[in-house]
Image (cartoon, rainbow, N blue to C red; front, top):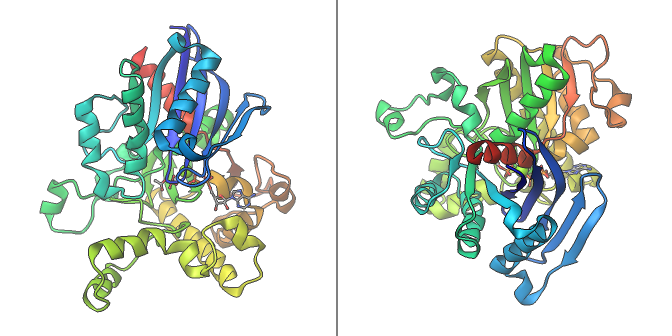
Length: 392
Ligand SMILES: Nc1ncnc2c1ncn2[C@@H]1O[C@H](COP(=O)(O)OP(=O)(O)O)[C@@H](O)[C@H]1O
Ligand SMILES: CC(=O)OP(=O)(O)O
Ligand SMILES: [Mg+2]
């Protein structure tokens, strides 16, 4: 089935994409990757070829910066590089699959409606996941579109790791831990199996540290536990999200502070995390560069929580053989990796400071009991592979 697949990963302020050539076999070849940054503000469209050379770099303004126009332009750009009739499908990252979607699915109007009903479970993400699906359906009604879910990878978690200690009727309604960042974890799981098969068969904590952040306890490449739960609000300190919080604080906000549900949602999703603690920025790079004491405290809390939750993930697997950093912070923030590894020393992590600073793939010392790796994630590659498998 020769042709091409466009994989889209739409977030709150950016749309990332990967364009892949399909051959006759199962392997896909990356032709281009890039994205639109500044969606909703000053959009900036860039794309590079597989070797990293720039293919386009444009700023859009006025009518060109409107959502449908931008997606139309991205689609037209992709088609101009593969010819319209060879674009065989578009795959999307959809953050929440709820209890009904545990594997990639070919989209229909009815399924889009079902996914829309999950918006309250992922208010920061689901609308952004669905927006490009709707626009592309209007632009190219006949083009097959596939949804790939962030939650699906965690379906292998044992019941005890999924369960909340709430009255059973909540569980009957689907209130349990789903977990997220699954397309990223799936990519890392495959990369480990290929490049470090011994470790991949063991007990590994994968840390996806980006704007959203979570950990996955992986044994034999499968999810055993994760720090995110029913929503992407749980677990670690994130850019603007608080992570794990005593539910009593929510009651305090409602009952003592008089906030309504919408105001609480805003505090927890948009004004907390690194931004809330530092009062400065949600961006790790800005905080690491800052001399402000509160910026330092925000980074300290971030690393402290990664350390605590790693111990919890290790407990879920009865031990720890490896630790993997991925996501924007995990891949690039040398100082943040150092702080995290210091908190994992007692678990058997010995960091090789030079390897960490030099951007090596393995950053633990040869004698480290726990192997530490940095693996750049590629959610778009996972999306493209699933899309290909589904439509082939
Ligand atoms: N060189 C760097 N040094 C420190 N932090 C970085 C660097 N590059 C990216 N980051 C951080 O990565 C985070 C964004 O991660 P990313 O995975 O790209 O986010 P998203 O969840 O939006 O996909 C930001 O906090 C950013 O500051
Ligand atoms: C699920 C989630 O938190 O995603 P992101 O990191 O893209 O915000
Ligand atoms: Mg992300």
